Length: 140
Image (cartoon, rainbow, N blue to C red; front, side, top):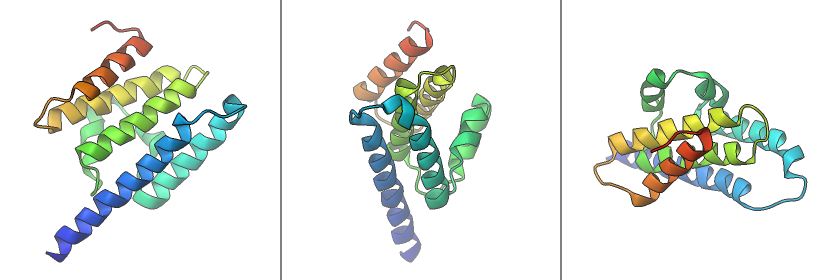
């Protein structure tokens, strides 16, 4: 029972962290292009310090490694994985560099993982997948 409570607290903690990070990227700011690098660094540091999730490592890994890497983290349920994908998608949406496509591809990988793990179909997630595919230049 105590272990179940711990896991539920971890899931909630990660969810709160990811929602807070996502809110940083969805609000409009002046000079956002200048601040994106700082926000990326801050987010990467927060994720690593709070959860051990290394965003830079994640962005560099092969698609075949993603499921195994994600499964290492207690508290990353389907909802939190989708929030992580939303955060990475927002990085891509705000990024004006050549790394933009990588962010969309990794977000797409996470949305696909959610579809694999989740027992219910999500129209909202499917729309996110379609948007990511448009951003990377793939057709459905």
